[in-house]
Image 1 (cartoon, rainbow, N blue to C red):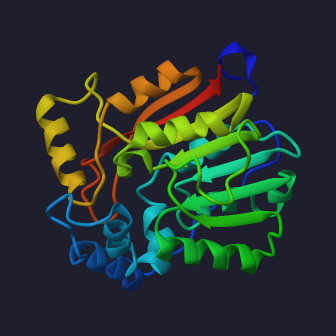
Image 2: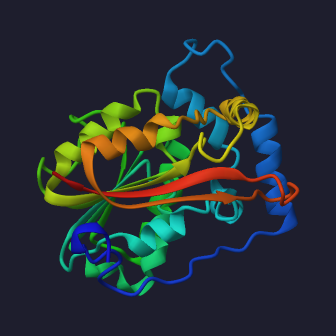
Amino acid sequence: MGKGGVALGAGPERVDYAPRASWADDWGVLKAMWFAQHDSTGDGGAHQTRLENFYKAQAELYDGYRHRMLHGRKPMIENMPAPSGGTWLDLGGGTGSNLEYFGPNLDHFARVTVLDLTPSLVAVAKDRVARNGWSHVQVICGDATDPSTPGLPPAGSVDVVTISYALTMIPEWKKAVANAKRLLKRGGHLCVCDFTVDPDTQSRLMQTVFTKVFATDHVHLSAEHVRFLQGEFNEKLLLRKYGSFPYVPRFIKSAYYVFIGQKK
């Protein structure tokens, strides 16, 4: 149970989604990350173009590598409220891999929507939906900060919104949170997991180092994310942990969090 007696993780059984990847697959991802076309000017190109330049060469290999470094996804999904016949919106949902954690029980939801800004990741998500025959799932290529994005559910109609490892990559991330809040029903839940810095457990030097390193991949760490979420929603769960990375010494770990809040 969460704070206030909320049955976090209630609903259908989740599965242990763990996609396999060969060394060659991992090398393909690493090569794409190292040699991606980076927009060093910051304002010299659209955000969507920057993301597409970064992900297009690794989109098909994304899940096999990322599940070993995006450690917050599993506990977020395990604790995510999932009302029967409800509506789930995955903002910044990438390849749609979060849906895999429900496996054959995804039809527990009446409607599922995955939205992402990056065309190459959206293409993978659409292939996933078609391959699994999920007729109640739609995939949208659009901006999580834009309330007018075609295909979004009506305001106040969504039971749960998830945002996993996306807030740190959205320049106007507060608008994405506001959009999620607008779409949620009263009493609906927002579930977020992401990288962060933790002033309580990290030295100022380590916070600076991780912030600068992550920024080279368009990931902008900030302790403000959690504080803002706590102010906008009634907090039901907050986990703070550290996770490792493939091919990096295991003593080098980055802070991440899982936040579940209920619309006030």
